[in-house]
Length: 334
Image 1: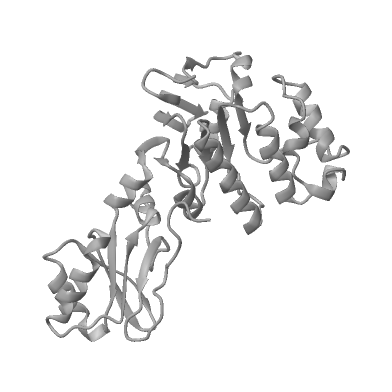
Image 2: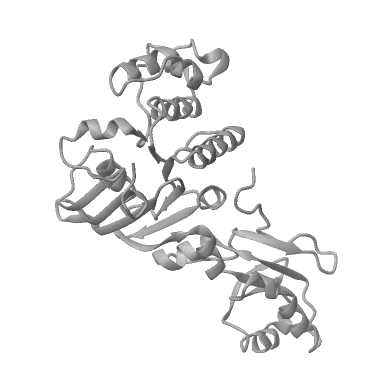
């Protein structure tokens, strides 16, 4: 079930204070159906408060919440039967094993299809061990399984990659992408920008309790496209003067003694940057083009970007100096 405008989750004017401290200041979120939505913000921005409000653990001071097309209000517990959630660290009975914990969780909420526990437990030979002996990553996997028990239409996950090893993160990513592909909506609150960049379809960024940017990840990254070029220190000023008529230019760090210049251009214009420099006898020792969620995040949240950032870049090897820093996989890579 979704709203008429295709949203599975929406908040309007959401406010929450803890005493004199304002945690959320009129938060407006619009989460489309059938996507992975990445919810980003610096520490203290209001991400966890938002998750608690969406799951009924807290109640807003003002504003509205809609889940799956209907208002979500105080005491509306049954509305959550179609919502799976993992907020902060998962809690389990330490003296029960993984299967027993999932069965206990299944008995306390919405009806669970037969065989669902066995389908989700996914801990191989540790499923019959007491949870007291589980690692943080194993508890996190069990928590995600618990959130999926009732086959929810909307999944709310707070830092789902917490404690997972690389293989576990890849498996989780594939699971969440498959859920979205099947028409479910996955709302992920995370501080891992690189993971959100390869996972999310839509991103919302908050700072100081307010939404500062929301939209498809592709559109955001296209807007934040950059070309980075590395030149000899003696040629830095001349290179900058040549490139500034094309777009805004800034120095973004130094590697192996040679500085980098970041030119805010579409990645497809990397060759044009290189050609312009070479025409005046300035030969780049490194060239990268790509999109950078980290740079956008820092810009919108008031952070300071020191040194070169580690977004998604395509590095071009020039003068035998190797692949540029920050080279990574694009969105959707396993």
